[in-house]
Figure 1 (tube, rainbow, N blue to C red):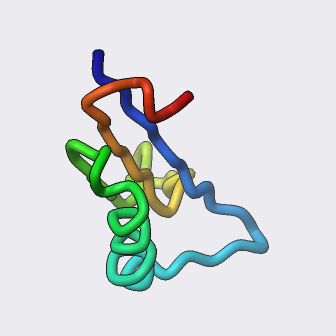
Figure 2: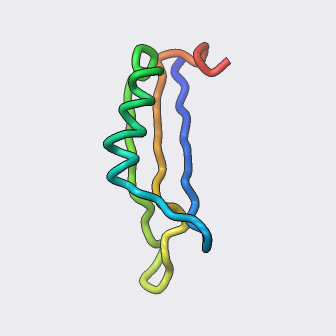
Length: 72
């Protein structure tokens, strides 16, 4: 049975997020350490929920695994 893991990076008044660093450095580190178990990865930028609403998250990362055994 497959499993998926989602990591959300919420926007706060005292937070910042570098999407290019995340894609270019952080995600390759995840692949280096978990790559043998990961079926697929997807990183998306947060979207606004309306015309006058800012997004609630900088990004959401989704990873799918062939088996739930990796998650404990």
